[in-house]
Length: 319
View 1 (cartoon, one colour):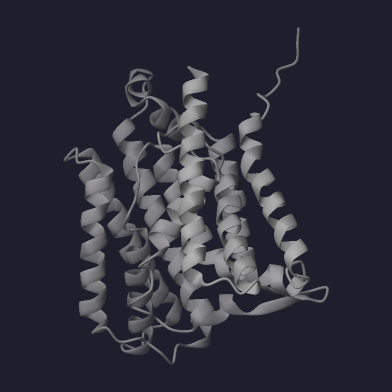
View 2 (tube, rainbow, N blue to C red):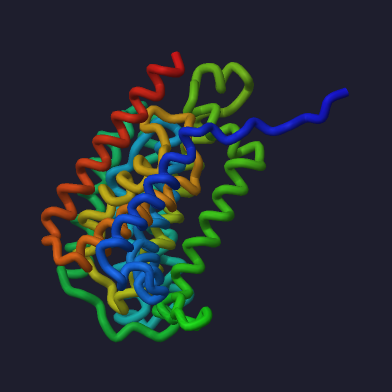
């Protein structure tokens, strides 16, 4: 009797890690400040919001969907939780729960429209992006919410790890990735998600309730967007109605760079963390080198195209 062994990690999964290592090596040769503990901690703080958004986005892309609304749902959630706490004097924990509930509700709406009305995820989330943006601006009157209670900014606090300050928000992001990795790798719901993304009809024939899986995925993604709103509020100290306008594309970029296939059914959640860090490292390194932000955006766009092209070639080679 032979021992049962798990399938080895495909070599393609190492691509994002190799790209991150090469990127770090390049910038370390360009500026001495890059590899300092303070700067690397800053990179993680800068990517923690997009990193958490990318968890929710990864779940959806693994099912062969996409969510364009994630950034604006995050913004709406942050405005709701901060206004409830500041304007209505609600307990900050209860106010935060209300903001999370709004994000989950949008995720649930997306899931129901995709499964019950059978609309394409791209169209559904493009519509809810605009709805969330409009509600955010109307409800906040386009005004930033300030004077937040300390409890709402606690995740922005730091602690010393050696001589480096690490934020609680960064630790939260890393713990969420570990949790998501465990669920996707070691549990039946995680395997069902991959099965639906790989072939929904085959998944249905094996007894998996495809619609229920999709609705759950979109609702969970909404929860992660709400947690990202908490981190955004903690990091900036305000409820900003103008936040989230580029984070949706940044989250998709992180997922694609992390090796998750836009065609569903293939990808490792930790790759999305690596993808988010790659984007953060590029922007941080180019800033240290004095490169204008417009070129940072240009390079990010090129990286996305290259990552999708590599995915396409990998799929063709596997056939």
